[in-house]
Image 1 (tube, rainbow, N blue to C red):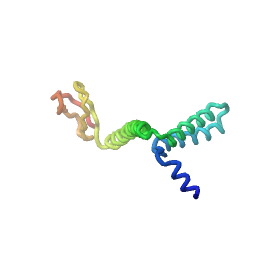
Image 2: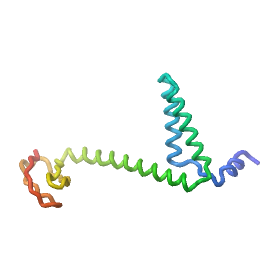
Image 3: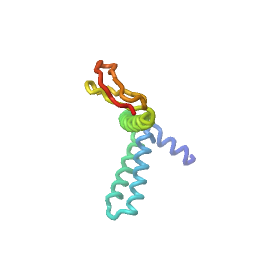
Image 4: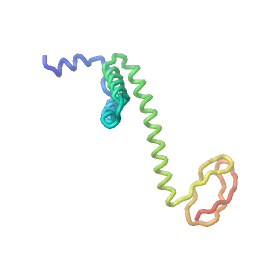
Length: 134
């Protein structure tokens, strides 16, 4: 039997590599690289623990548990990505618009730049306030 066939037979029923596993492995590589520049065993120990955790997940037969862990990981990753998408959108919009918050309900309201003093009415709560959109 060839090595590839033996490996496939060994991995049958095991979880394998996923997004969280890749993150753990790459983080371990970064820790190993940092350990070359920083004295002390901290980064070496972290790299070893991350590698062990990654291999444990990869060879685990508890597929459902590993799948749930991966879903939780992606939930956090998506929150971080959404935060940066909102920041990028806010920066792009700030070039052409002012973004104000309603003093009553904190709803964000977008007003074009260069209109001077503008009376703004909040669509959510109906509060009217005046802002300068220069």
